[in-house]
Image (cartoon, rainbow, N blue to C red):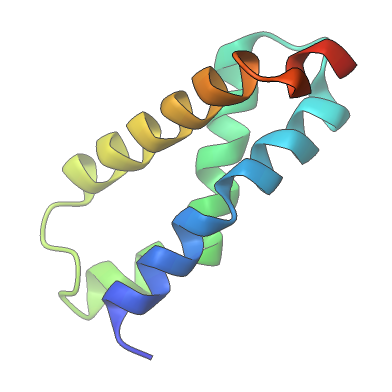
Length: 86
């Protein structure tokens, strides 16, 4: 599987990751939950391997991008009926 396919699959399951982390760490600060989500998604995408294989040439910018995707997902979920269940 090429990296773009792997990235798109990783992004596709971010809502599930965010929901799971909210269930596990609901009382923790938002930044801790975000860091957990970022860590989980990075592991799922095998970020270290992608950097070593030069599929990712700027790891910091890539993580910043993932962080924005997570923030956007949380914003969308908080604006939906999902937030009422909490």
